[in-house]
Length: 259
Image (cartoon, rainbow, N blue to C red; front, side, top):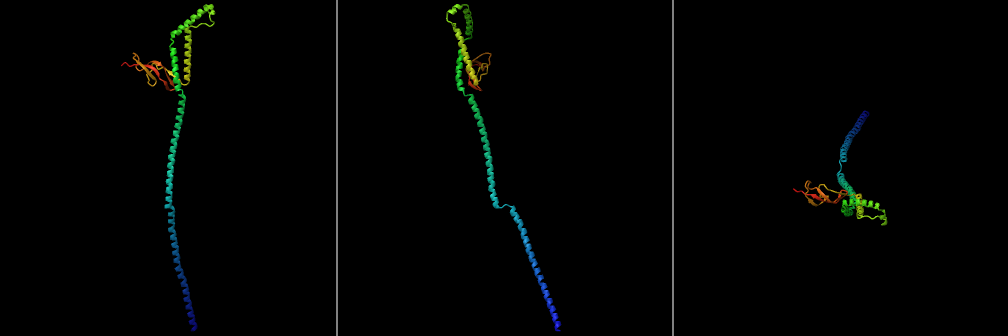
């Protein structure tokens, strides 16, 4: 009995021990699994929720960066406006400089062309004096001098003994001297006018033209039947032009309006 009882007790003890040892690892494993699962789940949830927040933070600019970029943008706009303003001013200055160059070249050309204006106007008085000297000798006197000179040469050839007894040079009459003087004055006037032509000084005679106060100086008016009033009747002194400017206005008489 004792041996059988001992065996039964040994079996019951070994069974209880095996049941306890089997029960403990199951409970511990089961209890540990939910904890690890919960930890893993919590980590994944925090990780998944934190990733979009970080992405949103990266996508959205921070307030400091916005504050820093805003002054830079304003400075850039101010610089662009300054560049546009300076470019416009530079273009205006360039245009003004080109206009200044053109005006300076035109003034230089006008100064060169009209530099002798005063000198030429003073010489015109001399031309007028020479013209009066030529007009003072009538054409009839010159023609009479020509005929008398031919008669003298004929008579001189008929009496060579008398001419040889006198001076070796033949004596000239007063009309011959007058003719030579007239020729000399005419040549002087022509040479003086040619010199003035070189500097673009030219005379003009407005007889028969319409009276122009910019080019003509009216000395008198006279009613002339059959002629249009306001036209130039007579030219006392011719006018002179230096290129396209009036150097001296022509002194004229104008037809008067009788109405």
